[in-house]
Image 1 (cartoon, rainbow, N blue to C red):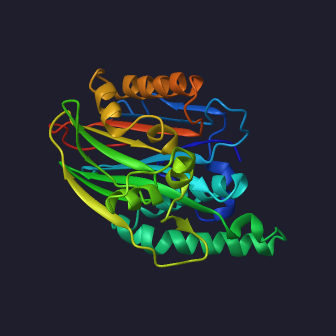
Image 2 (cartoon, rainbow, N blue to C red):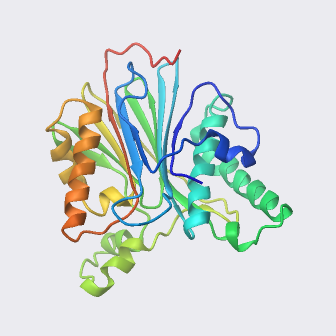
Length: 293
């Protein structure tokens, strides 16, 4: 399955086995301006390494009732399973938003059901249970309605709210590192730092569990930014650095390009290399509606 950008345009997904038919090809996916009237851009790619698979994915859903949903996901559980998991989550969300308004309900009930159904069909087709039983995905999703952003996330895929170059709000990772930090333990040995930052405590996947969905609500002002990114971005740049870079540019496509370029430069100097996914959205209070014709 190739790396992908999922662009929702009045289609639905009836069967999980249709995954490959609606995923765009190419290893260097780029979404400089998906819809001229939408102030957003995004990119997902494999990183600088020789990895053959991109386990990340990004998607958006726009409707004519002042609503825009942005999602970034990072699959885990081995390359094939992780890639399938992130794509499955994105496809489930964008296909269900046409009939179910509650994003929380989709994440808490329908996405786990989709994972179970996909796993069942995979076994029926004679595949090894190990190919899907351990797959899972982190995600960050922002549901923008007028001047409010409802934020949902699990794992270490992050959303950041930026105003005038400063971080207003950010999601807290579900990782061992974050749990230690909240307990006041910040003295992690250098040898163990990679382990604690990579140990994700909350993901979507199998076996099915009624996992809690963390939700926040942010109030947006004109020209505020929302940046979504997987750990390929935020393990290299922290939220404050992302805010500073974002404030130096005026359009979402410029911001995505700048952030991606900074990550590449730092990886070349020894920073952690990983799949990278970035979405940049600039809020406009005077925009009457998000319309996709």
